[in-house]
Amino acid sequence: MTPMKGRYAMISEPKQGHNRIPSDGKRTVRPSGDFNHINTRATARNELHQFLDHALVELRRAEHINTHRQFQWHADELPHHTFIYIHRFTGTQILDGEPSRVVRKAACLYPPGTRLELVSDADYDAELYILEFDLFRVTERTEAKRIYERELHSPVAGWIQGPFYGIQRIAAQLTELAHPDSETASRGIKAQLLLTELLYLLWPEKHASPTEEPEQDDPESWLKSTLQYIQQHYMHEIKLDTLAELAGMHPSYYSQLFKSRMHKNPIEYITHLRMNRAKEMLLTSDLRIRDVAREVGYRDEFYFSRRFRNYAGYAPTAYAKQVHRNIVSLSYPYTDHLMTLGITPCAAQIQGHLPHLPRSLTMPFHAYEPWEQGRQAFLDVNPDLILTKDNATAKAMEHIGDVAPIITIPWNQTDMFGHLEQIASIVDRTQAAKEWLDKHERKAERARKKIKERAGGLTVAVGTLTAKGPRLYSHRNFGHVFYRTLQLHAPQRIQAELKGKAPGTGFNWMPFTPGEWDGLEADVLVLATDNLHNQAALLQKLKHDPLWNSHPAVRSGRVHLVDWNTWVVYAPYSINIQLEEALSMLTNKPVLL
Image 1 (spheres, helix red, strand yellow):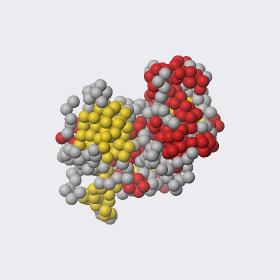
Image 2: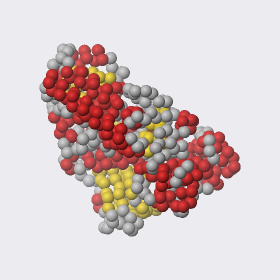
Image 3: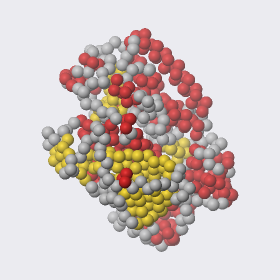
Image 4: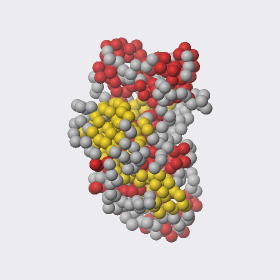
């Protein structure tokens, strides 16, 4: 394959509709709700949060490369911050003249000016995403304007440790935005939001190698560094002496101290981690036993099978046929799914309404939030299976990867019905899922008929008012009941964004500014509010605010405020509750403000 030298060795001209960067590296931006919205996630929780607090992020280029031929790429000097997510690759990276091997998945962030070359081995496929972006730090901030200067430094640099599911999702979305056919008015804002989310995902803990010294100011740094090393290298031979050297301890003392913290010695921990990764592959792939064994570090499939039987109680060939009932859910939508299928998790993250409550776990709601739940809570319930969204996979692996197999159901690759189908397949409840879908469709059909009789055809705008700023939703999450279940019309701009996309995927929400209603007009406006808003006071504000009062639904009194906590759960049991509330609000007479 011919090396692609010139494509990345120069700054490409922005396409029509992009903001151009002046030669002095400065940009002046008029304040608007968009920038407030982008920066609300920055909470100064760590250095990265501080770095992004008043920063602007701009996508310059995004490309997805998927080739079955030998791949070679290099840049003499990267013109922008460059993130490369390697989904499938075996070969060599040469960074500023220093070569290193890359095998399978990897991710790395490079600052401008870096010399970089990637060369895949012959006869290996290569699939990777290349994202180029600029960072701007605010240097002047007034009521009238903000001035940003280009920032060449970033606190995030070097190799990244997961969560690869979340990274791949964002990289794919940014690649889609960069496609010439995706030109929309909100394209730049979407890219900024996705890039900001990506940078939060990329903030790594310090990566350790056997030659690095543990941090002296953290008494548990020896444990963090060795656990991280194990999780990155469990598929290879790991010696106790190597871990002890990394921790700066005598092997015997290290083993005793490790066991006191993790309730198993290092060798047991590594074995359990390998077996759980094998269980995940047996449940979610069609790999042969020989291939599974090699993936988790066993060259002899017969030896692996004996070890697996001793650990799990049955042979690898029989594992996928077992019924797993002792399940932990790290995601509140998936907790809802399990209960819909007739399974009460032994412990779970809980949000919204549920028929009955399992043991509650204190889990982060977003990938960038800290893990608060203690390890002992998982050991106490002794799960057969741990179910999670992709945004929590990396932290789950770090904290409880040895406790049970961790099955990730990607959140954005499919809709609620796809989630239900995948979970039902894993827990052997396919028939229960079908029965729920049939019952739900009958209920939805009755509701659609009733609305048509009493209210006729309606256009509904569905949004949220939270600290993250005003948003309007599409066929997913808050809009699911109105647009997919009840088959009501969305505002014109929402429909335009959905064109050509699969139902429930591809486009979730868009920010909006009150008063700018062109293409967002609707007969009914439904707003989900959190506990920061007093609903009665908010209704009065909408009535007297000329920006809000210019919307047709506000003028006609067709505004409905719903509870964010009830409507945030995108899962079957909660959807049925939302359907009943939507039916009630749409078939009653409007109340004038």
